[in-house]
Picture (tube, rainbow, N blue to C red):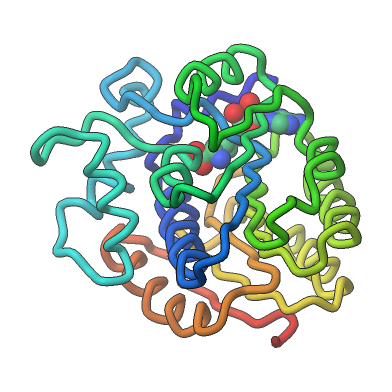
Length: 275
Ligand SMILES: C[S@@+](CC[C@H](N)C(=O)[O-])C[C@H]1O[C@@H](n2cnc3c(N)ncnc32)[C@H](O)[C@@H]1O
């Protein structure tokens, strides 16, 4: 486990994933009944962009920094509010990872479970949410946690699956884990992030998603045309059981992100299985 998200925090893929995550959380807040969020690959929760790792790659400069520099937009309201809440005045020093974005979206009766396998990262995120009764931390494998934690007692909510794709069979592991999760909790919302390096590899993954027969909406933001399949050319997010009107929101959000982040490839929004 060599992957450290601190090198990539706030990059174009985080912006894509987190902008959609905050929209999903806003949908969950529309009903009064409590919800639960399971974040299977939590990371450390909050990133210091003035640190050595972020400084080495400068990826956030082409991601969240660009978004914050532009005008506000209703679809980004919740996301940017949560980013600004981590910072003073108009500075950009800290970037909230998925744990902080989720925690900032919970009401008093909502809960979240964070799963992180890397011992150091698990200790860091545990310290961040010390004595927070709405947050449970599990230091274990994401796919074990999917079996252990679902369905949540609230029976309403979502799962974010955001692996580092360090291992060659991560796509297959995701599909297997998702199959088990859907058997346990068929009505949950699932957001699955995937890297777009090779379009053929992505097509094999999306074909597998179709086989589940569950409503599934994919959104893809391409940094560049995928001519070099060794590079991260785009960011993909598949949402299973998407809330009503997410497709319309995504139809506006994707071109907006594309323009603001200066992406050179296209955007794709597709119902793999219509709802
Ligand atoms: C892409 S980062 C997560 C970023 C985070 N979701 C966010 O949006 O801020 C992936 C994380 O998964 C962790 N990880 C890697 N393999 C794992 C596994 N099998 N189970 C749980 N966590 C794992 C890594 O240590 C890393 O912190």
